[in-house]
Length: 393
Image 1 (spheres, rainbow, N blue to C red):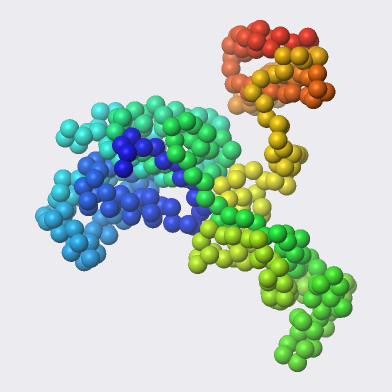
Image 2 (image 1 turned 30 degrees about the vertical axis):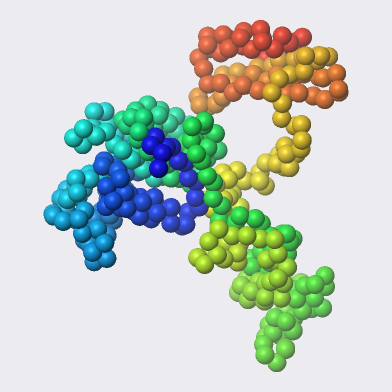
């Protein structure tokens, strides 16, 4: 493999990314001797040590490994908390985010392979300062501990739109891949919405099964008669409907299975089929599901503008049109008494083109007042607006 590779992998929760990235791959590299000095990094030192202990247990308990890699394991495996040394001279170490790493070597080797697994946690979702601190440590400490030949693998689930994994996805020099539990959603999401209403007991099938819905007979037992006297009644109580909700939803799915699966594709059907994933989506809520299983840390239901509006040809531009009819620039300083200290200030530029289109751009900044003013002067000189405004707080 090419030395100095940088790989960023975003995978759903529960899809074995840690098993592959912190166990199987480092274990193979260690046994084959391709990486003489391996670091495994996690959000906490305890978690990183646990990954290292998993490697140790695999070495101790697998006769197949001992047989296949007899030369690499010909001797004593030395282990102490956070450090593992193989008989072939390969060393593995575990570290937590934020640790001091400067000057660490194994003989003449700096780390040849660095595997970072879930370096940020839920607290980073809520704190921009924690995100910036972990980012600074990653770029300023962790990456600097290696050299130009160090291979780096970053494994994560995108918990926030500004998470490290999302930044690396946009950073040149990184080979980044995003995996989603549902690769393609089904064509008939309207049927899944009806299924979800049944699943939560928000409605029951009507007695005559209108619009392709289920009749009470389809919900009933083997004799075709409904076992639920209130089936089809809009007046049935919520507790009773809720008690039979899962069965209503199951029968609805069985009756419409082909339509509800049409167009869908899932990442790991043997482990999580479409129905399992859609149940997760219903139970956890769309926002959590999009974040944890789809690596899309935005809730589409809370977005004011549908993403399809941003996909049209010509929507994005690199330069404002030279023949603009009018240009205006505005600043939201985010320095009011109720503003959060971590909020961004925003310079927004808007131009009316000769073609009648509006062209907009923005710079989001988190700066002291004097530097914010300097940034405004720089943007003014470049943009040359006809008018300028500042929001009062």
